[in-house]
Length: 109
Ligand code: SF4
Image (tube, rainbow, N blue to C red; front, side, top):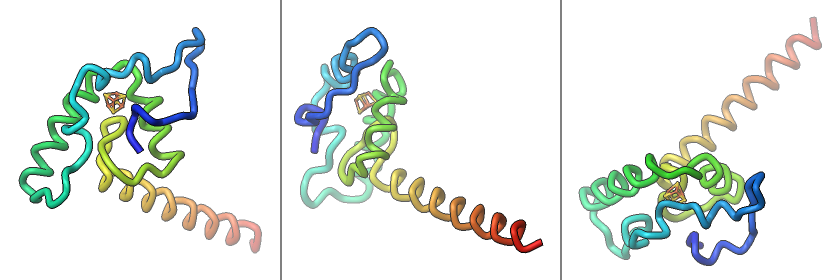
């Protein structure tokens, strides 16, 4: 899925769809999504360029929240690459697992 065909409209408090304020609207999507067979050095370079654009985007938080909530599996969204989102999800699972362990220990005492 790309930002252009993302169909769930998320309005900001002023009623404007956040996608209309996306910095990437004026950029080529090639920098945000990998071509087939992309080499690792090229991927690193492309993702860095995409993240530089995201860093100046006024809706970066909304975009990141959308990508994490909808488990976007491709591309750079909200300044996070596919790999960044996987790591974030993994850390979140570990935090929930440890929190549950602590809660269970607390309830046993
Ligand atoms: S944070 Fe990046 S991917 Fe998301 S809308 Fe802004 S420029 Fe586009």
